[in-house]
Length: 217
Image (cartoon, rainbow, N blue to C red; front, top):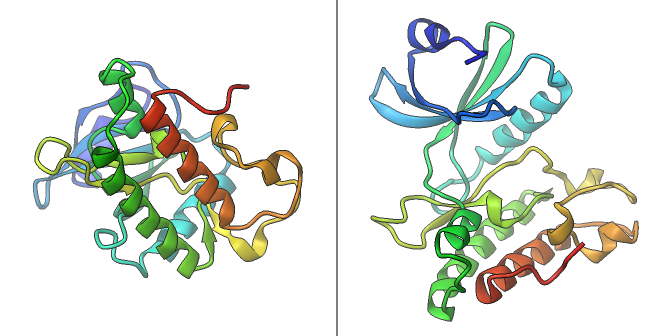
């Protein structure tokens, strides 16, 4: 791997358990915190990623520390640090994404009884973000993850705040959201607000119900 296992082990107290076989950046590595034996996920940014991009995400994550991550269904941000030119962001370890679930099910739709708790939890998350005046900007099936689907079925959290920003800083013409989850106002270059996250959530619910995207581009 093009990052340093020894750096995690000796300097930061993390033992690298596993990482994807294909090296994509940022990659997510499953690690063990040697101080408390807690399994965590570490998002690793290669040194050629813009420091402004990384700092933006960390700044937004620190803003979210004002919220209880469990009550508000948001991924728990633990720490961040430099690792021999790479930059690492530590999160609680979660399970699989909603997208992974649909694929694992062979594109079979979920039932309404399964979709309702997912929708409710993500609405709580978006309401919490709105209370802080934050737009997530990338609500999609990949960014809603199960906490532990085996032990706590359909308990989910919202992740990935790399595109998040204060609503007060949203500008007309900003390119946000994955294309199939993108709100009309983003496509049309109209003023944007937290409402684009609600559109993204609606697209997720449609994906779960129909096992297909309602927008094809």
